[in-house]
Length: 145
Image 1 (cartoon, rainbow, N blue to C red):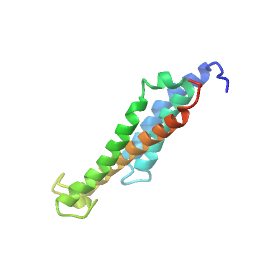
Image 2: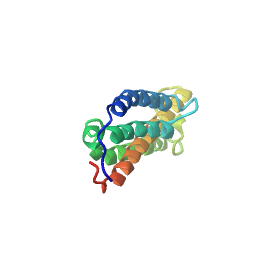
Image 3: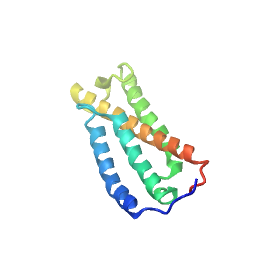
Image 4: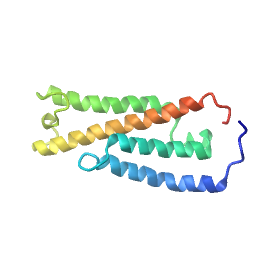
């Protein structure tokens, strides 16, 4: 497929819109434990912002924002955050992912809120990294960049 010349309007709009997408994604992640949304939706939105930059500006410029080599370590870190939160609860006498046993504070309700937030952050990081990795893997054979 022949690559067309880059469009300055598409470039400007994507660079302007992507930070707002990321900001809204962070809102969805951090408010997902007591309102609609959460880690999966926020991680998908973060990935969409990174993929938008990759589509509109090309791989070389987008590597300055999110390197392809970061995807696997970040995906693993997200899974470890998720698993570690459950394991901490298990080690302190609860069931796996029983957030009331996580020793962050004295109040059980606060521990549950913090535990759910940790899970949402872990899921968001894993989903974002894996979606960007899938896009990069699909594009790897392409000769556009």
